[in-house]
Length: 149
Image 1 (cartoon, helix red, strand yellow):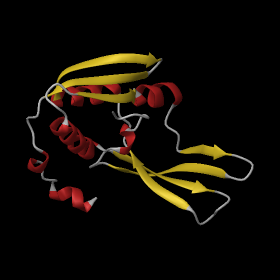
Image 2: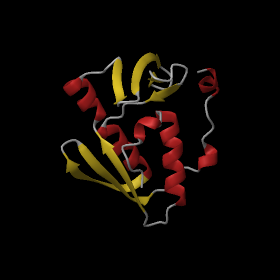
Image 3: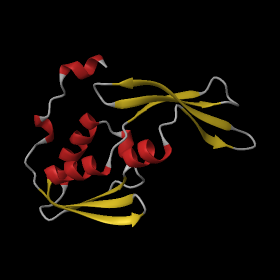
């Protein structure tokens, strides 16, 4: 199970490697559950992309997330998290804003049957049943141009 709306931590290249590995280790009748939301709809149509976000605000801390770039090869937004109280502490990270359709389609590529369970508004469980086991993880060699990003 991939729980906690975690797919933004995987760019398209990495998520395919994850799917291959999961589909290979599950039993023939196995089930893979992905906790997912339609971020494209939520972020771009409802709230809009935020160049800066207050991530944590409390009596002793203020945390900001700031847009610092975009990687066209990985399709990731580059952001930095900065804790205002600790001026020297910052974390750079990349996120990929997956839509529900892409994650469900990837599940379908690696699993014979896919189902959706709507949990609340735009949050879903994507269920992948019976892994296809067609691709082996070791057969996916990373393209050399990815080393340059």
